[in-house]
Length: 168
Image (tube, rainbow, N blue to C red; front, side):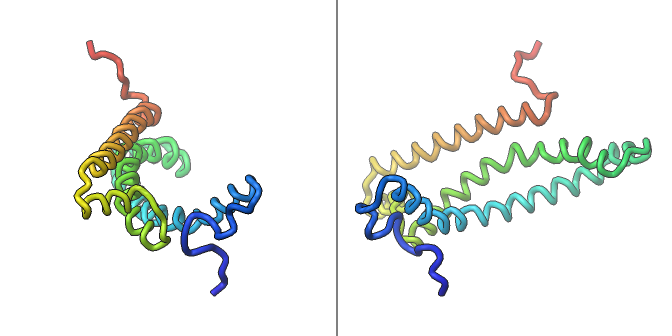
């Protein structure tokens, strides 16, 4: 069709002959479509979570009270609704994003002829290569734990009522 982006592989056929800066640009050029394809589905999940969270918060009593006090609609939405609606997004979205990203990685790697962890994990299960299966599971679990840690830290920033201090 238009041939704007390459459909296969991580680098061009003439990659070895390129200077180092063009090698980086060639690699980034090849990664545009796989990254776009893997993030589009996550944005749909984020949009749904955001909409449902906002609709749930707008229906609460404190929003009616803020409007009755005479606050503008922007003040009600940004000062009250936005902060409370962000709490479920901050706690739920990163975990679901990482899970969706790596569960879809096998499909993305197959479509764009890439060698990655999704394909490695799949082939190691098929070939019964148990050490590699355990290594990929360990890596994905470690990444999930780090995501949960970052989520907890972000949760404290979004909701100042939550602290990590020892309860007295």
